[in-house]
Length: 137
Image (cartoon, one colour):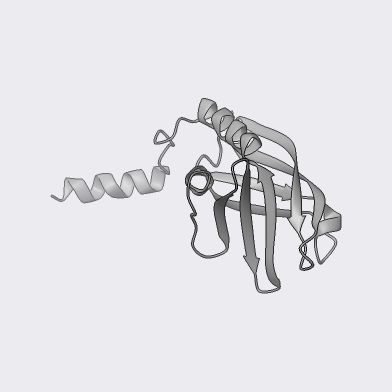
């Protein structure tokens, strides 16, 4: 049975006017999707009045706590000694959210207790495909 962790946390959305708007975010990890983390934002922050969930690699979050990381739609980077900036890029624009690094670190440690890094199960179909390739060698 999959294990799901949820960690509510506060964050700060940087506005175009360089102001910071407090935003509640739920950090989610599930052993059913062991390579990913999910950041869930409330309805009122979205452009279409629906809850918004951004899903990206757990390793991206881990790497971004120590150095700028990311390609494509999600970028994570340290922002001063105690904050981490997560940039979410969509065709509508870029949202920069500041998190306390300690909250993100605590979330990662909890996820590592569920599924150790590097021990994520390989999809059965991929595993079978690799086995078939190795049989032909």
